[in-house]
Length: 221
View 1 (spheres, one colour):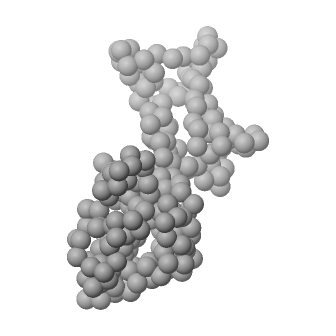
View 2 (cartoon, one colour; view 1 turned 60 degrees about the vertical axis):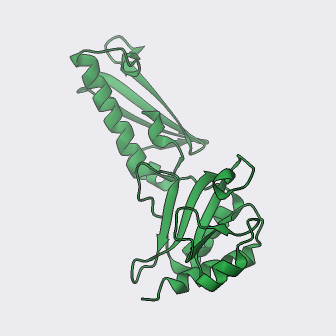
């Protein structure tokens, strides 16, 4: 169940609103399961690491059978279900996606947030490292962010990179693709989109200009 928190980061105020208490760099939440038979403690450390303990209040000993896949039976099933429901609720209400960690990806998100008021949207449960930005007035996409190995761009490098897909005019696409700074669009229309790797091969100033161009192009009918 802790896989629920992969590539996610807790929002401190959301944790506090949910009922977590702060202890230094940790946040701790306590609740009861099965009508008080168990005490569940959820600890979030450094906003990214999640740990749990489950204590049998009758014996005052830690209970672990719910974590053993081979354990079965109605009782352990009820424990596992309530335990999972608590974690799923915390993941949904207290955490936000934290997929794109490069400095240029962070700068890109902040630029779009400040200038256009838009946030990344993670639309596909099966593809949690893919997200989009869309215009608020017409819903058209103007940016797609993915985390992929550079080999997907045709580069002989298996390192993962935050890749940004942007709209561009066909003339711009035809003239700018160099497979060093600009690449044919990954999983997008290669005539109207291009890809760039957020690895500082472009300056932030040039990156922002490309974003503005993409945003403007998305306004056209």
